[in-house]
Amino acid sequence: MNRTLFYLVLAGVAVILQTLLLPLVMPGHYKPDLILILVVYLGLHEDPWRGGLLVYLMGCCFDGVAGTFPGLSGFFLLGLFLAVRGIVTRVNTESSPLLLLLVFAGTVLQVFLIAFALDFFSRTAGLWPQILRQLPLQLLLNILAAFVLLRLTVRLQRIFIPRRDLPGLRKLDSRYES
Image (cartoon, rainbow, N blue to C red; front, side, top):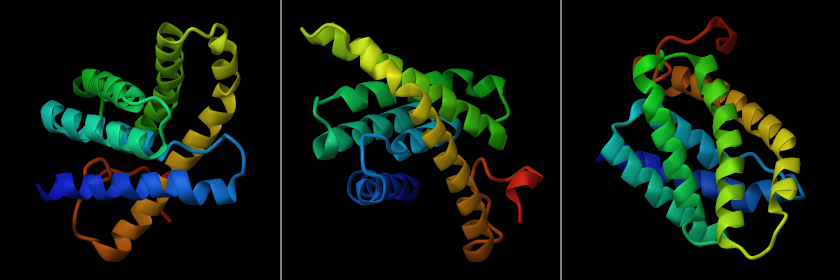
């Protein structure tokens, strides 16, 4: 229960950063998707039932705060979570480059799932080129945000809880240590 509450608080902080603070710093449509990074982490380290329900709840809450289509973020985030859960038994979940690679793949999956859902349920044609045009910059922002969050998490863990192991951060590469 404590972990679930902790993840919900992290999701709330990510939503506040993504919807209120980042638009002040980064004007325009492009912002790193912090919820996506959290969902990739949850997919690597949580069981399917609790994590799936948590991710779907996070997506629906995100749609309630910043979404224009109810349920779209829940659909996409649950699809991403299940895709990550599908490969979790075949990879080393302690690998930091894997987290960055999955954020990359998750961003691509996000673009395609959102474009598919909007094209399927919308009468407006020609959404694919608009959405695909945003992909390169969104990939760069999400990878950069994941890298910064990974470094920040490692530094904060060493300062505040040095003897506690966070899942996925036990065997860090030397690149993330300072």
